[in-house]
Amino acid sequence: MRRSLLLLSLGGIFLLPLTKKQANFSGFTLLEVRPRIFTPEEEDQRINQVRFIFQNPNFVEVTVKIFDINGVLIRRNLPQEKENNVIVWDGKDDRGRKVKSGIYLYQIEAEGKVFKGVIIVAK
Image 1 (cartoon, helix red, strand yellow):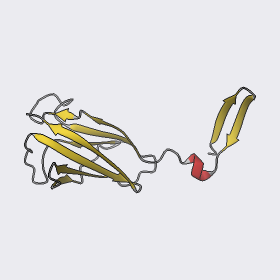
Image 2 (cartoon, one colour; image 1 turned 90 degrees about the vertical axis):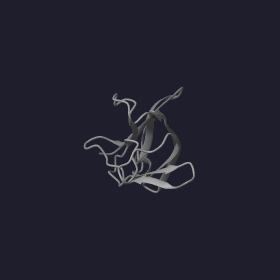
Image 3 (cartoon, helix red, strand yellow; image 1 turned 180 degrees about the horizontal axis):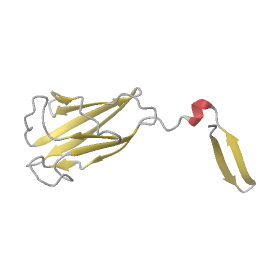
Image 4 (cartoon, one colour; image 1 turned 180 degrees about the vertical axis):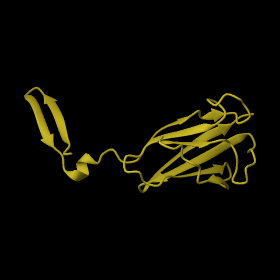
């Protein structure tokens, strides 16, 4: 399918064809991280895990790493929900132990892009 850009201006309506590189503007994009503050011991799934929501139209590999505030790697290779562009962190380390309350850093890598941010574990 050939993609085009519809351009509206005072001079009229124009349909501009895009090159293959221009049409691939929808590569991997991190859309949302929610909630930023969560409580792993809570029963409500809306607040007991962090959901990394993204677009991945090229189906590239996505790597998520979780670090503590000191930069120590706590968790890596979080599972992706099937058929969804969502990766979930349940507040556990690589050994399956719940982490302590505190500030944690995430790093998401895909298509050569790196997204970083902060999440807080509250108990």
